[in-house]
Length: 197
Image 1: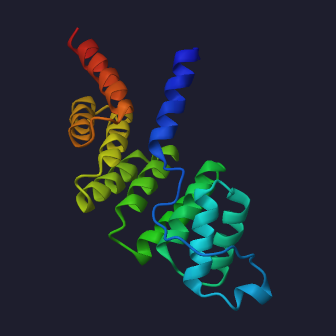
Image 2 (image 1 turned 180 degrees about the vertical axis):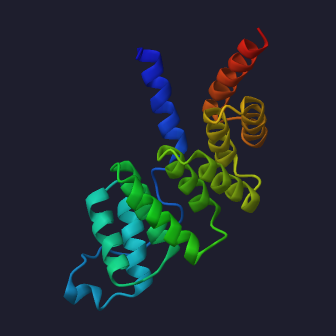
Image 3 (image 1 turned 90 degrees about the vertical axis):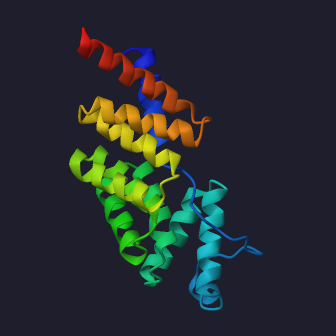
């Protein structure tokens, strides 16, 4: 694999999964998850603290808080989706898939979770299922430019180059600053040109 191919593969990974939590509110003060303190904090305060740790890049603490929330049956879509991000980044794809599915079960209109689930499914080699999940994300949020890129990547992997081209073009229309969309579009156009030859 050439250096350019390695950089391209890394770019695909960076595009596919968001590395920060999706929503949060500021929380006043720091807490530590332990049996004495956590019983004095509200569910929302604990969730907010988990998200704050995640946003600040403190993955061990965020993980501890997310796991605590899950063990306490908080059933919060943000917790499950954000924990899915961590699991994905740790290479625990099957666990990440389960976490996203639970988040979607709680909040079926959560476009971000559908998109990330699609990426996980694609990584697991379930391309057809991944396409359906990504299309659901776009159905829920048609202006979700990143989901259009992700769908383009899945379609490209499935050999549906013309559909992938349309998906990349849509993402560029929605957000011209998504540089990777141009790269992926260029690759697809090259592939389509080779098919004509």
